[in-house]
Amino acid sequence: MQGPRVPPGVYTLTLKVGEQEFSQSLTVVPEPAIASTAEDLAAQYDLQVKIYDTLDKGVKGVNRMRDLRQQLDGWAKRVEKHEQGEALVAAIKGLREQVLAIEEPLLVPDLRSGWADNLNKGVRLLQKLAELPAVVEMGDYRPTDVSYQVYEHLGSQIEAQLKRFDELVARELAPLNARIAAAGVGAVLVK
Image (tube, rainbow, N blue to C red; front, top):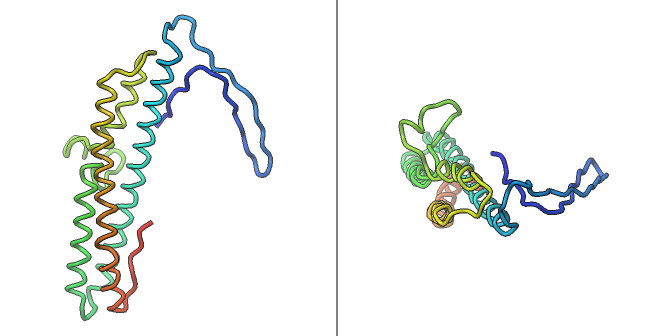
């Protein structure tokens, strides 16, 4: 995704190559034909940054969920022939399904580029939020109240799912790891 447009002002650009740093000042000037105030453009930028930060947290959370599901799939295969395999596989698959249930509202699980899953399964929270920057920067004016409301609505839902995941991991992963370790077959890690 393209990042937000910065408001007019003086910025310092720094390029770091190895141990060397090169810096230069840059002035972004407003277009003369635009009547927006500096405060309006700063408000637009601030909302854009909040949107991108929430998207970043959401995508990182989904990546953690997918990593955990992949590990759980691997552990289910490894322990199925163990003497306690049936019970361990059931516990592993149960946790995997709980993780999947948390991921599903955020993004279509295992979505691959070019697949029509968005059309078949509906647009999810992260995809909806990813469309908001285009609305916010549609013109050179303060973001609308509706833009703020949409951000708050989607952002709070994304945060709730990420919190559910963290709580699930805190509550369920240690006991599962203890069962796996007691069976002598290792443990699952969450990054």
